[in-house]
Length: 578
Image (cartoon, rainbow, N blue to C red; front, side):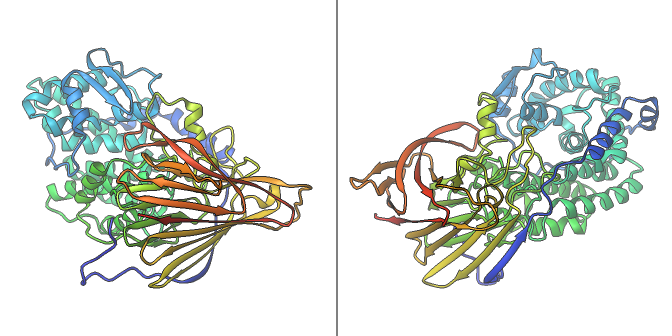
């Protein structure tokens, strides 16, 4: 992806010099917060909550908005063939049981959110798609129209469901069966009342934003909804404020979640358009911040880099969402609050994680990736992170998916085979990186990023400092990884370390005779040379999770060594040969 812009668009401001970033806290939800959430869900089963869901139901929707995002054609064709499929898991429609609890989480959320309506409408006419959609809708209503369930009635899923039901109303409301139609509209109204009291209980970030988008959409499309619309807009403004950083990133630090948030707001804008109203101003402002932040973590293949458990997603999916946003802008090169730094020169793109991991209270499943980087040359990815801890296909073993969250699954240094931030047994992040110090300088000849983190100080007594320099023509990336003694901890003897460079799909590595270098042949035929000093170079197997969530066998360069009490230093370089 080029960073070039038309002359009328000003570049983003790049601040040089040092910056210290601190994580807001490394604790997850407290016991009191967990109990409060548990008791809130228990109230869903009480007669009082059932009474709150009662009320008049609409005879029709005020308007039917467009869905601005194209669905997945392969999944849509599978639906027409009688099968619902997502992330490697597939089940025949005729035997689908919505009450099953053995589905994988991605598949269950796909089914219960009704996101499959988007895929179906992409490949089918109303006549072709309605029988499939109404059959699945009827099955879901039979199970959950009157039963408030912890999964099926989860606030974020109800928010998405309202957006999909209303945008694809022709598919689910074409029936002449008045009892069925009344059941759909009555359940829609009950779901909106459920969200009125529960939207803020969704997790921060995209889940809470989705819930409040549902409230606003219901306010705009269900007759008599003006008070709900005002209430929903206030809630959505809060959700955007707590779910996004000042520079437009997601609090989860996940590009995949940011992509999801953009498509939610783009979809909501069509709801406003159906009522001939402009998008709520705070939501419009958030959209203009989010898109450049997302572009900032994209490579030349127009797909996302792999951070915080997300995969790259396909270029087609990303393009559809960006087109739907209507925002035309340039990539954000320095997302100081979100934590990603971008350098682009020639055809090369470098993306660096220069911040602590996400706060455990804000997101589940964070990754210990601080100071990792990804590097690409045009459409070819040279150095990557394994990615996909939360975006892999169902066939990937759970233990391997969890391993993708570790520091070793990212292109950075690991000390004594440990994580820079602890990954606890319950899946949350523990102690580790609390501070990252960052320095950035740019010139026409070269751009430089220097960053350090304290994740290994408490246990091993070392700060990890990484320096990266990309030449102005993009043909050489030089790096230095140093372990600097700090803190009271002093380990006797030497401490082993490994610096991993996971290679992109299709990159072939061959070691040179001296054992200090490797030749990398990229899929397009370009050759890059890797050379290091200060450690032993080896070539090992690795894997990468592609845009469809599938594991791809790859290789990795591993530089190993031992750090004495006084520290260690390894320098390395990637240089294009052809």
